[in-house]
Image (cartoon, rainbow, N blue to C red):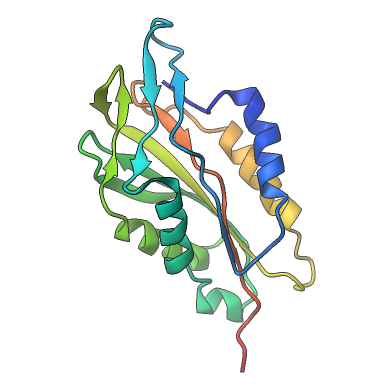
Length: 188
């Protein structure tokens, strides 16, 4: 079951959300949503997994813990890292990996932060806990860098989310809104 939180509204929603003003860390996430599954009867509903404490707690966690990697700042590396996480039936995060990355220098920080997350409330299908896949887009951006274009990063993020293969058709897929980490280089 592939849940893109309804595919057509996702594109304008992502464009609207990705057009925000850059800050040191700009993290957004959707509230836990309920969507009807495509593969089962219309009466069946699935609920997205939820970070303990809810959306605001997750935003605070990401803002407090995500840093622009020093080596990436020194080399003025920016790009998109799409992290893929399985949230099992008990709410434990497993199989945390980069599903896409513009640079290995950028992968380590989202991996580190996601591994620190506590247990979530698992996704549910008809009130029964189920394993799910959750994607976290991390955009690393350096304003003022020659050739830097946040819009290009946003386009990559949108294109990637539209081309996600269904590797586990029986496991729902949820996509978080982007986490934008802005670096200003290393101050000496």
